[in-house]
Amino acid sequence: MGYKLLKSQREFLEIPHDYSIDVAVYQGGFGSGKTFAGSLLGILLCLKFAGIRGLCGAQTYTLVRDTTLQSYFEHLDNMGFVSGVDYEWSSSTQSLNFKNGSEILFRHFDEPDKLKSLNLGFVEIEEMSDVPFSTFKMLLARLRQHRKKNWGNFQYRIFGHTNPELNKGWVYNTFIENPLPNYRLISAPTHQNIYLPEGFCDELKKLYDENYYNIYVLAQTGDYDSGLVVKGFKDDNIREIQYHQNLDVHITCDFNVDPMSWILAHKTDNKVFFFDEIVMENTTTEKACEEFVNRYPNHKGKIIINGDASGDNRSCTSEFTNYVIMKKTLAKFGYETEVKIRAFNPSIKSRIAAFNSKVRSTDGNVCVFVDKKCEKLLYNIYNLKYQEGSSRIDIPTFQQIKNAKELKFLMHPFDAASYLVEYYWPITL
Image 1 (cartoon, rainbow, N blue to C red):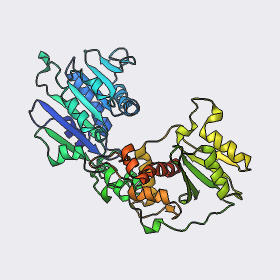
Image 2: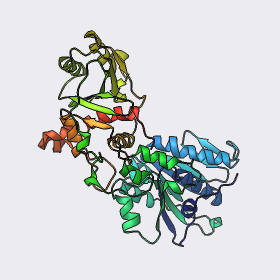
Image 3: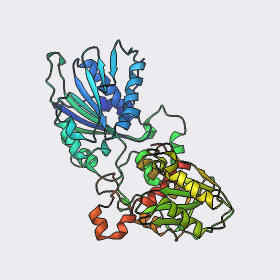
């Protein structure tokens, strides 16, 4: 079959200069065809330059396996290529091998030193903004595969695809602020993809807060709110919330021992009301349960337990998981409980997007409300930030916590609250 490429995809594939190395990033919103274009380029390079060796990777192998590799297989199917005839997939070496001798290795970049022995003709980077600048520079230095005589006008290529950065990080500095002549950034807002369903962008506008809409739909680089993780939280998000003993109570949990962080909430179909928190230092799951019982001894409604999927870890025996302990402990006091958690934790990006979309959507709808009793959650909302120039959260070090004890309460209460919000109102990134 043939492809009718978008203008931005064609611009990404074609090289407009004659430098020996082309460095390009396809920066786009959701549905803008980023991974599609990257994996297509990888296959075309393998077909055009027989014997080329490429590397395709991301910061985590899960992202490579579940996103990029699947796109490669889809292209190969669409092109009519037959596994075992035109190409082979090796699970032992995690590589695609073409009958003309070309090869693509699929790797994670979490241990970049293990890649230093490679000599490559091209490199593809999934979610480039999540990869450290030092790793990018190391990969750039691996573009030194010996050119073959039949390669003609071959140029080494390192190319990535990514959503825009939440703050102006190394991708912005390298490709927008101070680009070299052979460095290219192709911007692709979601609405430019004419193949998306009608009303797709309008639906995203209803889901996202304004800042996320600008980044993940309009493909604009973020730079706002002094790097705060939670965006748009204002006075109308804070209110006195009445606890109702006959309503269901959601306890959403982060099981860090110091501090253990549980946030308590009522919820409706589209709103959540955080009315209290149990944040305790050097404690156990049983003691946190007992603290809930002391505060709400006459609760009549069901207790729905949400939170960290790792709290259901069964590495020992099932009777010792945090959620089983909670159910057993609360049952002793006559409470009816139900556990609702994901099989695996969603990414922090997904949880932040979901939380911010409920704090304040692009249309101005406010669906997250917090009582002043939730001091540690509010502390996170007002103080949890990204590292300067990156999309990584600035988590305090041990030494910083030692010098300022209040820093130990950053991250865990927000984790707890965001697990609940993402579970009921997920956003796919």
